[in-house]
Structures are given as structure tokens and as C-alpha cells.
Length: 591
Image (cartoon, rainbow, N blue to C red):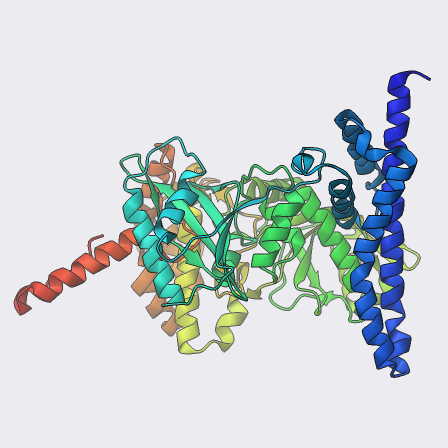
């Protein structure tokens, strides 16, 4: 046997011995946990306490046993680093099908650091996850720490006034936390890479103080003059959930160990599924895989029935849901009514367009699957009949399963038309304003929604309005926005048919009103905030800017939070306070 072969064989044996040590630990750990049920049933409280104490010691005992075995069998502390590199590679290979890979990695670290000299603790054969940087400021050094957090990213463009921006962040922290007492463990943990999307770069981390952990994000933007600036400071899980929304494009993030990033982000947003976090980081296939596992788990632990989704039925998609599961399932119909001049391939192309486009927080992400098997017993008969009638080419019944050959899955939202039916006056105003804002955000991203009816928009749990019906979307820059021509005679004016020529990409915004604004209360709010959406000039102006190469800013937060706008407001308030009464009344916030 050649020396290299001998080295490789020894490395393999060491890796196997180490994994056997971990497997023994986890087997005993599970056994102690499984026996808790019988102790509970027999009211053996002393035995329960004893098991809890002993279980705490399990890990250290197994680590000591593992280190002793490696020393006895392999004289492990005398092995060169080349062998340890080989050990790690073999160990990684053994974890491919393992059920506790992350725990086994920790065990590997514990055993090797027990054996080797401390100078090797940071060597690259250790499983390390340099996911975040930790900073430990005092009240006096907090400003300098914030400066260091930003400069550590070494952006190769100067800030307009970083000192000013940091003062704004400090002010936002004071507003968020008040005069809080800094505990012994006060620290700021910041993920090591910036999160890039649209025209922004985001610093993402959390502030830890005692038992409290507060997520935060600092968006960095370009100023009109080409400098950098911190645009605002966002705090709390709800703000981060909107930044990482399923309706936004995926981030670009440089990550050596994505699972560690997901773990950190999940600690900040525990309500967000891991599958959506993976997708938000651009790892969409992993997100799909985890989503499907979660779906199968939910099926095993639920008993309700798939049904046709509530709301107005679509002319292109058959939509169904499972009431206990917060998603909807969409299947393209085999045939469409005459007014829908499209094909299945064209519709799939529209959904692909949205997947690859910047969704600016206004277009729901979709998961596309092929050949998905559902338990037939969980479908109500009415839904089965609809599937067989409207999309028979995509349906197969295979014994106890129904196989759908192609479908999309989206987050479930309340259809806007249904939401408005039961909304209070305040909720209605907010929803109509949000509806117009959603359209304007899509316009900024070069998307014309096509069918702007209320039923094609949904309301999220955060009160955001999101578009989800993509079969008629077009690039704004491809559309021709026109005024309705003046009727040339009474016959044309009274005609129920369109008497003027209409090209395939022609759009007449003035005609939106009759379909959208039949309710006087809704019309009043819409016309107050979004009347320009009925004017072709609005659409045409945005089209020209896009064709000229302009890329709009779209913010995943309320623009009132922007430091720039807060400075303007403060300046306006200060001017109003010192101006004579007649002048103060005339002051207004700069646009």
C-alpha cells in the first residue's frame, strides 16, 4: 500500500470513529428523552430530575470518549495537519445522508479541539461558520462602533456624510429603545455580507441586550450626487418581514455557508418559514425543496379537504386551497373564454417573467412544480369535477392519488374585492390607497398589470396590497397609452361597441374608471390619491423615463421613515416655528 493510500485510509477510519462517537451520543440522548413519557406517566419526578441532570453530561462524556479513542487507536494528537484535512473531507461525505449533520459538525469541532493544541483551534479543518461579526460597544463608544460596522464592509465609494448618517441611526435607536440600561451582554451582531437588491445595499443584524433581541436593517443608497448614504434604520421583526417579503425580488448575498445565514435570519424572523428565507437569499431550488417537505408534513398532520378557493373564479386559472394551509394552488385551464386570447405557453412565460423581474414588493412569488401527487381522499368531489372539466390534460388519477402535471403555488391573501366588501371606512381608505401605490410601484418597475380589477390583487397580513394574476401583464415600455378619441357623430357616441381602432398593445387608462369606481366611497378615495392613473400622460411619462434608462427607487419601507424626509420635515417645522403667523401658514414640505 502506498503512503498516500495509507494516509487516506487512516483519515477515513478516524472520521468514521468520530461519527460513531456522535451517533452513540445522539442515540443515548434520544433514549433519555423517549423514557421521559413513562416517567411522566408513573409520576417518577425524581427519576425525571435525575435524567435531566445526567443528560446534560452526555455530550461532554461522549466527547471525552471520542478523544480518548482517537488517541488510543490512531495517536491522533501526533498526526500532521494534512491528515486532519483529509479527516474533515471524509467526515463531510459521511454527513450527506445523515439526519443530524449540523449537530455532528459541532461534535467534530469539540473532539478535535480536545485533541489538538489551542494554536490550531482556528485552523480551516474546523467546521466554522463566520456568519456574523459581533461588536461590544459601551454607551460612550456606540457611535464609534456604528461607524466601524459600516466601514468594515469596505465599500469602494465614499459616503456623503457618514457622521451625519450615524447620528441619525443613533437618534432612531433612542426613539426605538428610549434610555435603556445596557446589560452586561450588550452587543450588536451583524451578518458579514451586505444584502443587495434593487438600488440598495442592506446591513442586516440584531441588537442584543439582556434577554431582548431586536432585528435591524440599515439600507444604504446612492445620493443624486453619486455619494453613499444610510437612508433609514428599520427595527423589529415586522419591519424585517416586509424587507424579506415573498413579494420582493431575491437578494444577492455572498455566503460561504447559506444554512448559517438562514439560521441567523430565522432567529430574527421566527414566523418566516425557512423555505421563504432560502428563496429570499436567491436559493430558490432549496426553498422549493423545503416548502414541499413542509407541505407533506402538513398533509400528514391535518385532516381538512382541498376545495375551490373562495372568490370570483378566474378565466385562465383554476385555483384551489386547503383551508388549514396558508397557500393556494393554481392550475392553468385547458381552454379559455373568447375574450382571453392566450395559450398555456404564453401564460407560463408571463409567470417566468415575474419570477426573473424585480417584484418591488407588489407581485407575489410563485413556486412552480411538475407532477405533484395529492391524496385523492382529501379532495372534495366538486373540486375533482372542476379539475376534470377545466384542465383534464393536466390531471391523472392514479389509484388513491391525483397527480397534477403542472401547477403554481402562492401565498394565500385576502382577495381585494372580498376585503373591500367587509372593510370599515378606515380599512377601505387604506386598501384603496395601497391599491394605487401597488400599481405605481409596478409602473416604476416597468410592469403594466393588464387586468387591474380588484379581484386580481390581494391583501397581506401586514395590510400590503399585492398583485397575483399575471396572465395579462406586459412590460410598460411595450405598451401604447392613448386617450379615447372624440366621437365624430352621435352614432359613434351612443355605440355600445368600440368604434375606434385598437392595436394589440394599446391601453386606454380613461376606461379604467367604470370598471373600478362604481362605489362612490371608493371613487372618492381613489380620485383624491390616484386620479393620475386614469390619465394616459401619467403612464406615457413613466414609459419615456424607463426607455431613457432611468431606474426608479422602490422602498420596502414607509418613505416617511427616510432620514432625508425627516430632515426636510424638521426644517419645515423649524421654519414654521420662527416665521410670522402669516408666513408660517404658507410654508409647505419640499417635494
